[in-house]
Amino acid sequence: ELKVEQNPLFLSMQEGKNYTIYCNYSTTSDRLYWYRQDPGKSLESLFVLLSNGAVKQEGRLMASLDTKARLSTLHITAAVHDLSATYFCAVDLNEKLTFGTGTRLTIIP
Amino acid sequence: GAVVSQHPSRVICKSGTSVKIECRSLDFQATTMFWYRQFPKKSLMLMATSNEGSKATYEQGVEKDKFLINHASLTLSTLTVTSAHPEDSSFYICSARPWEGLGNEQFFGPGTRLTVL
Image 1 (cartoon, rainbow over the protein chains, first blue to last red):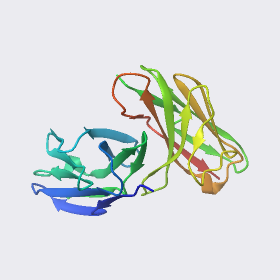
Image 2 (tube, rainbow over the protein chains, first blue to last red):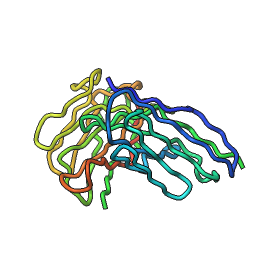
Image 3 (cartoon, rainbow over the protein chains, first blue to last red):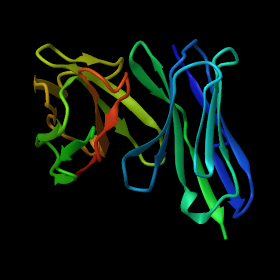
């Protein structure tokens, strides 16, 4: 059974600071996704990572994938309040997604 | 492109009634659609995979007689919660995977919040 764990589960950080969210998974896969969810809303796709060593960046967010370590990271640079949300990674195995536990990010002014 | 809609966005019903939720892919055809359930402050859990023209595949622990799924066309899947009870209250989210192109990515609908009184 595929298990996907994120840490931290909760993260409060000040504006302007950098931080990284980690996503570990238990079974080999080379396809991983990052999503953002605002309260009461559905998922917004952030990144699609399709191979070992993949790195993608959009604004203040950067995601990477290490399939050998079964690890993906979501790095936040110079956080701003608008980034406050819950972030999920999801691993694609046999064309089904298994979601991580989620990281609730709060940016403090 | 790749827009998925759900209807209704919110529904409140009495215990014992049935509720139907629609999931539509608006600008692409989807041979496969997925239904997820999310409890407050929790992650998404896959309930079932819906394939056009065939029976849905349910995840372990999901009652297929309670959560009826129909995927009658390449753009529409429905989830019917039968004889709903308060413990069925949740946020239900569907996703659709395009028939071709756009890789293997799933595109998510806006969700349906079900409250059973």
